[in-house]
Image (cartoon, rainbow, N blue to C red; front, side, top):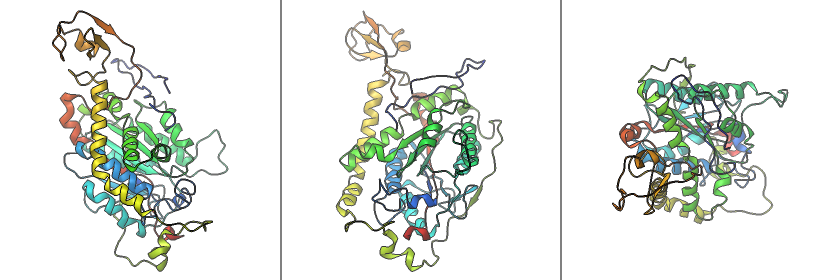
Length: 418
């Protein structure tokens, strides 16, 4: 969407500005709802999306997003949650760790440890995990990114008219709108077959927000266009995080980063946070061994886990991380003014170098080649996503607050082997 709409507040701040998707139709809490058992029929070779015996979509997203955001986190302590199992359903969440959080390098291992001990279920709502993220942001007063990995399916009764939202959908809408009053960005990574109608609605049509705080990414659509693991991870990371810089600037303009903890003037619904599942519990034979990765229905021909692909994916991780960082830095250099490192370049000098209009008005010489400025040409800017997490003067505080949050749907357990 290239449409912008909203009301202007008394202080001149645009209360809502839709951030357009840079690409045509493009969801880290993890979701363990029952729908994960069948949502991979087309995109994951009919396997359960939480099949930890192979490099499943949840693993790939956790690995890619974690390594991309790691350099922006100071304390390397990430609160991670799951939801949508038989315990939490649509009203609560459970923590990955008994203490405050996990280091990035332990999140993927912890996910694999927990999955066999969780029973997928319904109903499903994203409201509890969004409320939990809001609670963390409110108590710290700092900017966070909530990454939700899910198959996107929320509970909707067949009796609900097509033009109305279900109870769980409305609760999620209300939670996202409430989140726009806090320094919180929400990235929803959709894994599996979809459908993604609700996610696209959340991304593009929620007007009761102070700023556009929600970005949806279709994992399969992006990765299916890439033919190497390295390119898959790089492209996914770029598209998943492309709206973060503009969201952060909106948060700064709204003054959220200056409010401090417990000073946002909003009531936050209480969310019960359960301790991690007991990973020492005995598992039935149906939860172990080959049955764990059994397909949902018999395939027409024998198939093998693509060990080579998994090995290749895992072994390009280090170079993918540097590649992604390089691409982000490259995009920043291309789009941002080299002086303020905040606004986009839109003034071209006769020498060919560029700065933003504000900085250009104060210059007599080109900051790159030192040639005396004789011509200033204002160029038309195509809408891009500026790849920078914060203005330079707030870079240090931003590094502290961009903690990755894992909030998607809960993971499967006994039903994994169905």
